Image 1: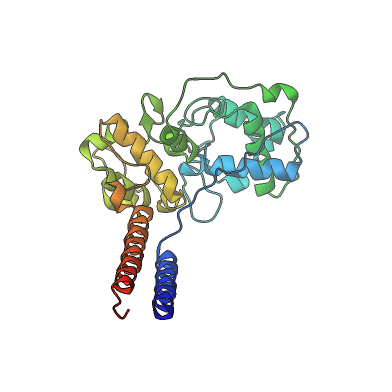
Image 2: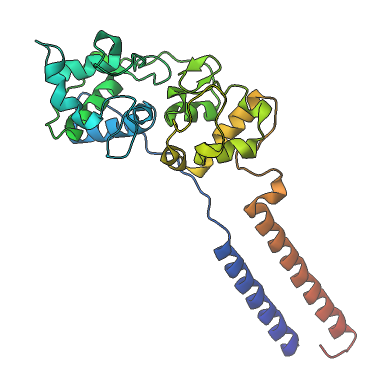
Length: 299
């Protein structure tokens, strides 16, 4: 009996050891919703600028045409110089007022040598609120080395009108700036091709790769190299799968938002099967040992 018990204990330790080893090999894929940052009339300037930077890099899609470092896009003016030059753009207008106007009504003044192509930040694809516009202005002021002077007023906090349910993938396309260049279901920019039916001609795996390797192909009639490679790589893996799942659905295709073609290709499912097999093996070992003991055989 003691020998049987020792074997069972040894078997349990072996199983636990294997589970621990396999667990270290499985990539940990866990996503937590980002903490929602709420803009208010009392939001400190430093925090407002931080929110504005997130908006400029994501939902606002500013970096599709502008740059904030030496490397970046030159289709629009360098945003590092926007605050310094703002006061000289329109005589009699303050730098802060000009920055707000340049986002809300960009056609009111088009910087020489640049095309007239920027849509209002209040409209698709950015769809910023006035509070968010002022957060971006705060970021531009900090980026230019100036003090944050812009203030969020109570009327800037007007809530957006509630709409119907929206696929998370579509929300993420807007959040990560994709709609600044691409149009989806009638909304978005026109610098890049309409991607509403992109999954009809391409498999989801190809679209997923295109996000992180934009140079692998260029749609005929469009300029190559517009999408910066680092833009797609900065998108979290889970968000990339959600966006592809949304595009696949528009084309009538099925694609799991986890990126798995079938449930059994997911790491968690495979680990679960391993756990099941080893537990069944332990039960068989215990049953065999018990049968031998009853028959008076040596364990």
